[in-house]
Image 1 (cartoon, rainbow, N blue to C red):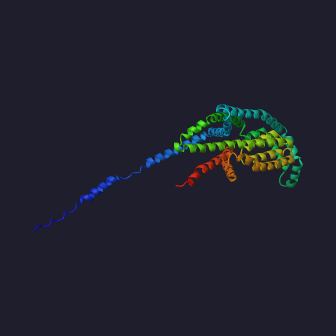
Image 2: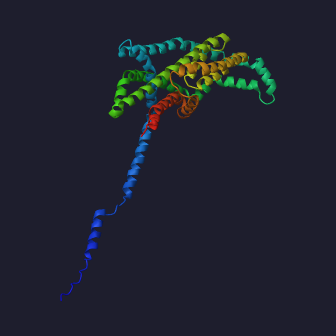
Image 3: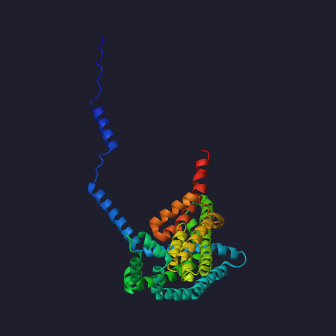
Length: 376
């Protein structure tokens, strides 16, 4: 009889081969090079510090560019309006020439009056201080708080301090610092005007180059969104300058009627202060009322009443009618944007805060909300 052959067992080499195959498939373990990671991270930190230092050094140039671009966007609506009736280059020349003429006209018409009135104010400052000291208002105030504060001495000390030119120069950082600041301001103004002209002439080509960075299927919507934002910024600039001009003209008329000291100078202060949204009119009004106090307490009181009434008219009548056509920004966002911009970027930050808020609202309304409302 045939004997059954015993069943041959599987080779023990198979698991070894499978193990070897598994190790070859997975590959060797990953080794972490701590030195390389540390070196790359350190180089990244150094590069960030270098970029931050360069931005800090170029901060003045960046401010010039920002202001010039801001002005160019503000002048572009006027150029576009003239462009419907003439070629764009001619429209740009006319608008820019008009801006130059306005500045030159203000310089020749306002600056001599301001200088004369400021000189008169400085020359007769001691007489003005004496009139304030012996006025009925100060006399009555001295009678009320004379036991605590010597009002007459405080006014005379303040007058003596401001009559000394060395003290004024010390407040400005010295004669060299004042001269350097004036020269730097004049140079900066010329640079801003030149950049404004270049930006105004090449605004459309700059937009076209910017559009090329966007994919073709999204380029039309991006161009429409950009036009809406730049248009809102331009209308805002025109509206804010219009409000400031109204305040300056009305201040000149009213301060001349009530006999305020240096009315042209104070009206110019009102115009410049009103360029800053929200807090500019209030700050300029406080300065003007304090200066009117040197004429007489009654003059200061009348000026204070006028500016309280004017701020109500501006807030509830002028500003809504002018600015709502420029930028549709809720009142709460205007306050928050102006305060935040002033905190971060001083006067320039307060100027650009509301256009930035308006741009953000446009982006949310035309980009974020449609995506959220779209059906999957």
